Image 1 (cartoon, rainbow, N blue to C red):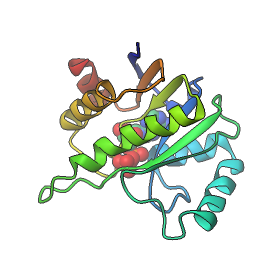
Image 2: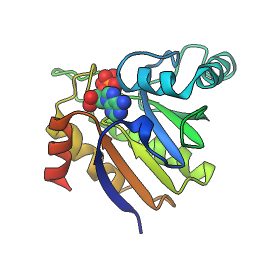
Image 3: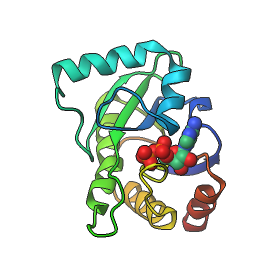
Length: 168
Ligand code: ADP
């Protein structure tokens, strides 16, 4: 049984086995939740991301995929970096956004993660509409089999928290 919960706050304050980062494909840091994770987690995370770029992802991590690194100084064992799609009104990119949640859970399973914290992937700078993003996030994690026992959505933005709460 997987328990799904919602928290309003900062994902870098969470004590869980894995924290998911809404990264960009460079894996080299950015703004929003990505910036917060690198600031708080320290340089070890960036060093691990650079190593991944050099070994496995010379062109960056494609949207919809996920990869894990150390969590550095965060209260977690792992950061799972996933790259959400930029919202497009012309093209339906929902499958890529769903893939972010599914692939993050697959990587979590591989690592033996029991508790995981997700941010609202793509729902910031990448402009995904919050109501739709919340629906898609919850439907996807509910329908993805995994050994993770606790899935915590950590919503920084009150409107995102509201949208997730209305759906849960
Ligand atoms: P993206 O580029 O995938 O849209 P953003 O980081 O811009 O990623 O935004 C994703 C969501 O993360 C937004 O709802 C934003 O408010 C939220 N966010 C920003 N900082 C944090 C944080 N420290 N903890 C949790 N969520 C955060």
